[in-house]
Amino acid sequence: MPLLARRAALQAALALPALGAQAQGRWPQRPVRLVVPYAPGGGTDVFARALAEGLRPVLGQTVTVENRSGGNGVVGNEFVARAERDGSVFLVDTGSFSLNPHVVPNLSFSPLRDFTHVSLLSRFPLMMTVANNQPFGDVRSLVAAAKAAPRSIGFGTSDAAISLAGNLFARLAGVEMVEVTYRGAAPMLNDLIAGHLPVGWNSTVAALPHIQAGRLRAFGVTMAERSALLPEVPTLQEAGVPGYEFAGWYAMAAPAGLDPAIAEAMWSAIQAALQEPNIRQRLAAIGADLKPLGPAGFTALLREEDARWQQFRRDGLLGRAG
Image (cartoon, rainbow, N blue to C red; front, side):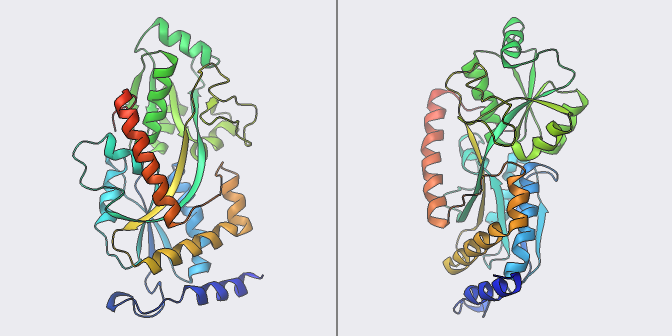
């Protein structure tokens, strides 16, 4: 179906019943903001900007990305939790959205209680990356160096989920490393590329361009299977860390109390946007596995992950938040 015809059909489908004084007639009547709770240039930011581009013709409205970084994503999360419930503000976040309640003391919101769950957008592997100026050539030699000199090697992280990936590696590899936390992937990558930081944990989205350009080395991916984008890079299990498996994800949420019809309409728009060949190609090229879930599926995932993090907490596997 041509784009204009598809847009017309989708906009007809998005015409909602009366939603009260705040949303008379068709949604969206106002520009839509996608809040990214991390600094510009990181994986979440890259994903959100591609998604915004895909949503604009579907919604027939301006869709912008707004970065509100700080507190391991907490600043942006709090902003969205308190935002208007008229379908003009949405959150695009990582797995840290579900993890933060277990690593951030006195969190003022609950991902399960204080948000409307719109969509799990994509899953993706995380990746261990190493600065070019470091002497170790693979995971085994890195582990040997870390065992020979405990706490002499630092690793960078930029959100709670990536922090867990790094701390889980240290625990399963039996090494003591020093975590260095950043406000976003971009500043962490800058230090890593400059050689100021030995090791960094990244989303594939954020790290891939630098690996392809030779600015960083990839030592391992966190999922049980190799990435199709970097098939030569082993999984961390293959690289010598038995039992290691971890996946990241991107998702969309909105303030609690959003009209369910708007959440379903945005879910429909997301599905349409992710089917656009150019958007799909761009996101696939940065490692995004585009198998989205709707509101009910995302809520179920959050409940499963909440139970998983509680078990990790009991097992002592959760690192500190940045």
